[in-house]
Amino acid sequence: MYGTAKVYSLKDGSTVKIRDAGIKDLAAIWRVFSSVVGEKKWIPVLFAEENDFERLSWFSHHKNAGSIILVAELEGVVVGHCLVERDDWDAAAHVGNLGIMIIAEHRGKGVGDALMSEAIIRARDKGFEKICLSTFSTNLVAIKLYKKHNFQMVGVRKRQFKMEGEYKDEVLMDLMLDSSK
Image 1: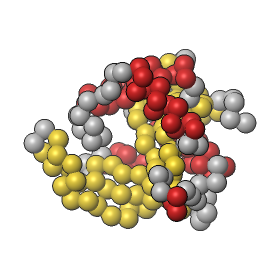
Image 2: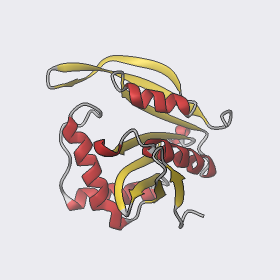
Image 3: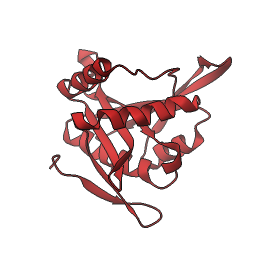
Image 4: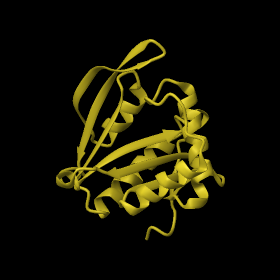
């Protein structure tokens, strides 16, 4: 099933293809990552790694650990990606940590909704029982998307990050896969 892509309809009537990322997608994944990092307002990363070895190590680590790495393609171009990685602790092997990124000009179209839908399906199929994520308290569009997918806010870490002299609160959210639809 996962060797093929799943197509989702977007708000404007076009479609997005969600599929497993392959090694050939690394440059596109990093283009998305670098674009989001460059905005300096959505994730607590100050610079994007540009080393091919580091990218390959990241990809190999996640594939070997059983993580889910998805990409979103619009007309053959990767415009977003989503990672559900296994927790590092043995006793938390049932927990996935989710991260999602979409290039700015493709936000608001439904790409994130499609990536989230597919990530949740894949996580359930892989035996995850819970998905955790975090976002800045100022990322209201993302929080709305997560709530749409039944994530519950479980806490806020005040002044968790400091970027360009400004403190950011981190919102923590969870989705229990065994009790959500």
